[in-house]
Structures are given as C-alpha cells and as structure tokens.
Amino acid sequence: MIENHAPAIIYWAGNIASRLRLAAYLFPFHKFPEILFPKILINGVNG
Image (tube, rainbow, N blue to C red; front, side, top):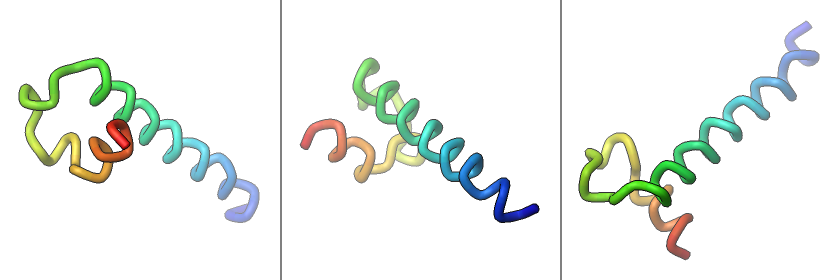
C-alpha cells in the first residue's frame, strides 16, 4: 500500500516546490522571509 502511494507523494512534493518557485518568481523576493523562499529556490528561478 505504501508503494502505491509513493508516486502521489512525490508528485505532491514536486507540485508544492513548483508552486513555491512560481510564487518566488511572481512576487518580490524582499517581501518574503528567507524561510519561505530559501536561496535554493530563488537560485533555481534565477539560474
């Protein structure tokens, strides 16, 4: 049963990450604390 749920969990985690990257791209970085948009996410958008 856990094996069946693994792809859904991976997809969900990827979806959250993509939404965070989109939000970081759409909104000014300086308005959000570093904990919401780690440098890895910001660097992923910029680079």
